[in-house]
Length: 194
Length: 240
Image (cartoon, rainbow over the protein chains, first blue to last red):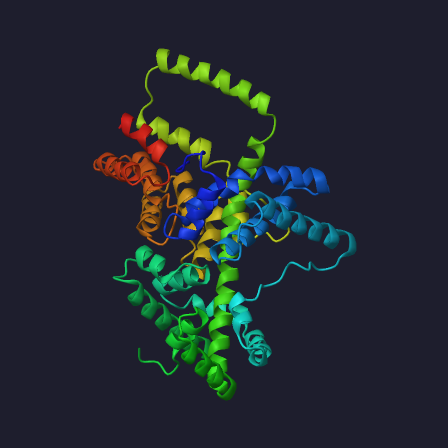
């Protein structure tokens, strides 16, 4: 089911991703489809089965989207080159894992880039405190929140702005969406502590 | 906001919305106040965990698209030849055969798109992928059990709701399917929502007195708002 014409350039798709809003997923899908042929190429080149390369491609693609949305992709290389490089690294990780049984250097939960803006003398303390939180418990407690709160927090974590959230969830303004989002965060912490 | 933690200040600090003086005041407080450090850590840990959660769900959605895409990229000449044959057959079909009824079109859509689903099974296959695999094997009762359990754990999992509706549709449980697709269609937080289109299919299949009109109005919305299924909706509308 197509919604966007095939004639979109990479630059237009990047603009679509950066603009956020309700169309972001459509632009993502279009971009994902455009370079999905890399799966077959990667599978042949690295002698991996297609399921593994598809998984590596999806991981690489999500990293690219994350970098674009967060403004870390500056466009110094072409989008395809950037995606291809990350995808190749993921494939190499898979080969390394298969041949040496070692864990990937690219896997694991990525730190929020916001951590790096903390002053040097507090960063490691905050990082330690972050690791003390139990991810599984946080996930379980999230399920106890209302559907709207869950959707709002997930959208926030996925990089959507308060403006996007206000549009998606029909709040009167980004400021109202922000207040609601922070209330949801407070609720989550109350539940997390119990 | 009646909360002890000043989440607003933390949020503004991390989003670079504080003035330089407020920013250095915040960093001074962070050094001196362990409670503020704990609040900031909770904020970041939550964001990090939910981001990973969202990415896992998104990855499953993307992987479900993959097999179709990779198949399409191979044998371009064979595909081009097949396309020509299909085109000729299509022209012949249009000229010489009678028009399909909406029910036949709905059946054809279900057979083509909702019987053999794209699934990528890896070592870390999750419940959603297992369910899709069961649907492909027509083990619909087991798929229903798995999806019901998944929805209990993750009531906002839109993919699980969609496939649960597909299972009900394929089992001929049209009331249940309409309810499930209806719930999906009402979601406003999704970027590609096939809920309305799938509900219209279920209504065409159920075929109660008002179902045809309801299906028409749903399909009209799908077309007007260019939602998922817009092309198929146009075709169905021509036959309703």
